[in-house]
Image (cartoon, rainbow, N blue to C red; front, side, top):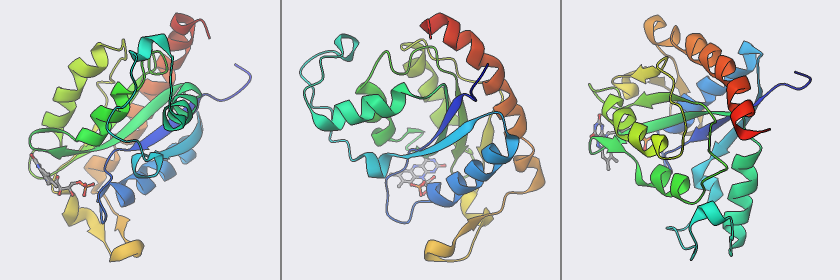
Length: 194
Ligand SMILES: Cc1cc2nc3c(=O)[nH]c(=O)nc-3n(C[C@H](O)[C@H](O)[C@H](O)COP(=O)(O)O)c2cc1C
């Protein structure tokens, strides 16, 4: 394979002050050090998608709005994803569902790893809720995952200077997840005809 596959780290939370930002910065560093991927960060807060406003099913790729065309071009260039995702009300957050729903083929056959977080449940209910949604898009979700319980106890500093400092047991999960994504990428490319 001549070029490294593109891994997009998707920051799912769009809230001001989100825990997702320092967590994603830690994931980005781990992914760059891993070395198997060209790493991009995709921030749903910056993507600025409205609630789905396209008239046609995304399978048709007849997008009318500039924000959809830009989102399509972004996701299109990825080979794999890590979703850095909070748990909201025992599920994943609405901004992530909306961002998924905007597209179809751009996601298809591209493996997803999850870094989930919340309170005692570590975002695991959010990941379980995500799985049938991604199954509808033929997107495999890695068993190797990074669930983070009590995420706020592992964030040091204030404001823009916050740093996510995971306990070793949590940090140990990220390389197996990235390895799994790297193993799936060639199969995904074959299935996509890429
Ligand atoms: C609307 C909302 C619902 C939440 N529901 C849950 C929940 O069901 N389970 C949980 O563990 N944490 C829940 N939390 C706490 C979040 O996990 C915690 O606030 C986390 O920081 C949210 O991620 P974010 O800061 O990146 O947006 C909820 C937070 C919000 C804002």
